[in-house]
Image (cartoon, rainbow, N blue to C red; front, side, top):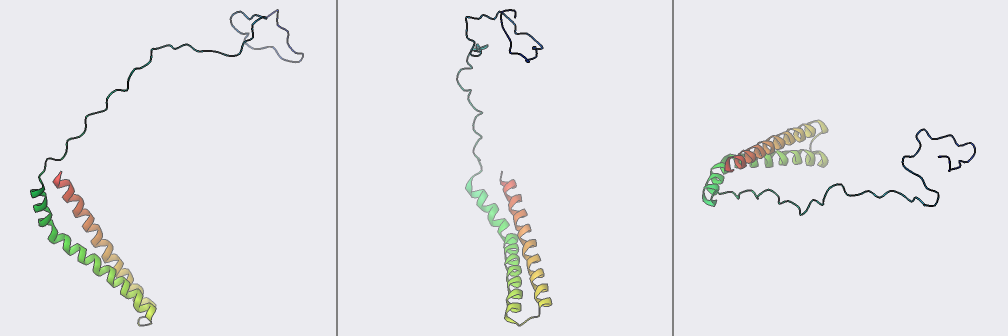
Length: 131
């Protein structure tokens, strides 16, 4: 460090640089060396999952068997939506006062939502059964 001059007012470094510093060399930065070889080609992914071996005929039979209870849930959902729409329509048309129209809307919406949830649960159970 004796050969380098510091600007006035600059505090001394806590750790002097390691190695030998020469005045005739301009230091632009560091160049890191590769510590390990290149990894090579990308490894192959896992094998593809097997396609479902269930035939179409048993699957269709299972769907036909579940169609009966699902039909009731579909009809209930449609009836609930119709009741909710009728309640709102009657209120807008002046046939019903707001309180009975709100009651019809809430009951119809509740019925539609309950039937739709039942329908979704049955569909999920059917899909799990087919797997």
